[in-house]
Length: 221
Image 1 (cartoon, rainbow, N blue to C red):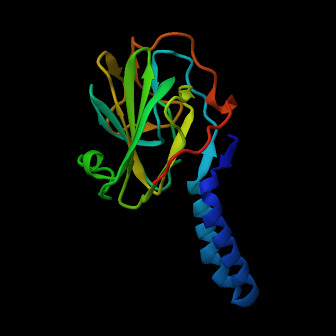
Image 2 (cartoon, rainbow, N blue to C red):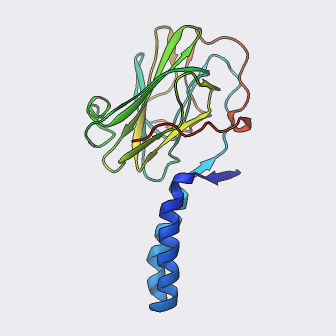
Image 3 (spheres, rainbow, N blue to C red):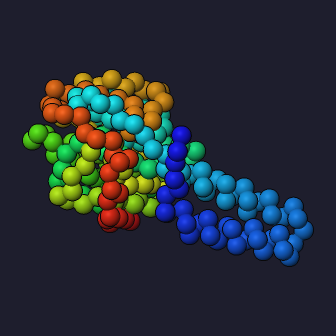
């Protein structure tokens, strides 16, 4: 599957490449192994594969790779470990209504109270008069949320909206009428797995977000 490396990887990759080159030139050959392993981990962490959203206009699409740790009529939460893709995507098509960053703690992201106490960025997407709230939540290791959308921006379902470094969770709050389909423990893929369905989502299926121009980078924390 074709994929790119997110630009957030560049500072880390550059430093590790310089360290590896220095180790190769001036130290015993085996010392290059550690920086090369770290470089490989970094590139893997920041990978950004293309995804193919389902064409069902009623589908609420998963915003993150990982494992479902909560699934009920109010909220579906996905936990990402350090080996998952960390590029996050819009669960539905619509217009960004608000983007709000809230400073907070860095509890383990799989804890139930992390959604209320951890540092997070809330994005509200409005579609057909219904607000859809998706929250990027920092975790124990994650210390920076990169948000790449802004109010007024139109989004396709599955379009990239940001990234969290390094290990975290994403919550999707479901409005009334949405029917959850995900189950706790399920492994999911951003931009492809259907988390829920709603009669409130209507109209034609959006074009694949990977054919859209990438949005300009917005605020980050």
